[in-house]
Length: 113
Image 1 (spheres, rainbow, N blue to C red):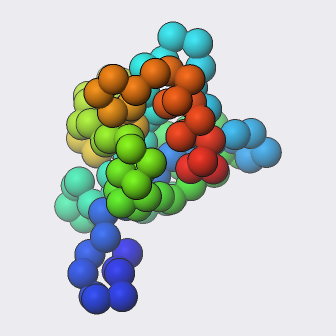
Image 2 (cartoon, rainbow, N blue to C red; image 1 turned 135 degrees about the horizontal axis):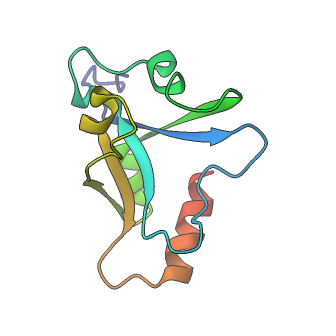
């Protein structure tokens, strides 16, 4: 994805079920899993990501700048072993900034919808 200046924009992909909120924490979760498409070479494709998830799943794209603008951070974390190697390598979590309450984190995630 390019920005108007022609520079590459870092994009993350969230996988969700159609008709369900994509950016919602579940009980016990400290962050939301996403995949940075440019973290591997060649970059991940939507089809490659979706192939690892249940039928009916959809992808939602957000830029790293959109996440940061919410006061949130992207943290590289290991993907679960049941994911293909390329998805494990590209796995990150959207996490709250230091000192952000869980309630504030949830609100910021809703704003990403």
